[in-house]
Length: 229
Image 1 (cartoon, one colour):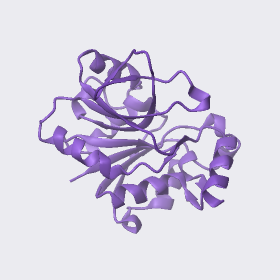
Image 2 (cartoon, helix red, strand yellow):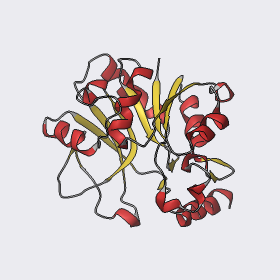
Image 3 (cartoon, helix red, strand yellow):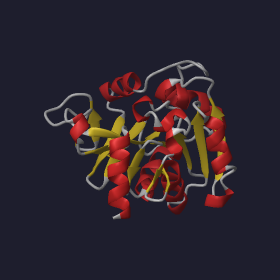
Image 4 (cartoon, helix red, strand yellow):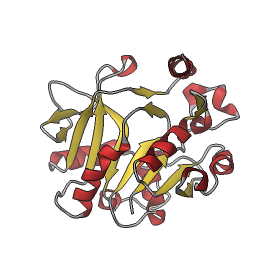
């Protein structure tokens, strides 16, 4: 079974006042909530189970999406009293996933990336044809993040390099990457990834298609005009 986790627990401080009463994943762009774009794309790609973590106004997310039947998915929820950061949120959600590698998508991005492109890598990691602990989708650096995050050498992601790309918020992970994190603990993802990169255990790909980080009301409005125009 192909499983995915959507990270939806962020408070969205930079999106205020929009997020004062609406969780960021439910903000509408192009006629539908941000998170619905992901759910539809995951279902179209053949994913069957989706776990969504949430904290701020999470009850609204559950009320809007339900058990996922509307999307042809099985949705479960990982509830956090306070947001546990990325790695902490993933570790906390592991009991709702199985022991196999799984995809992760940030709820606060928009992209036309075809999630079917993740399936061969999922299969390779599941069948142990690769010992990678993570696989990251990297994109061109947006204006608000021109310095980038990681370098890509062949199909390996490295912490340093002459040309840095931006991590898209789309990836695949083995549960073992989060083995040292206690459920409910706060933990960042970047240190775990950098450790795995030092051991050549992070693969990656450069996606040159459309991708947006919806970090401000202005970016949300701009994307909405693009999609509706």
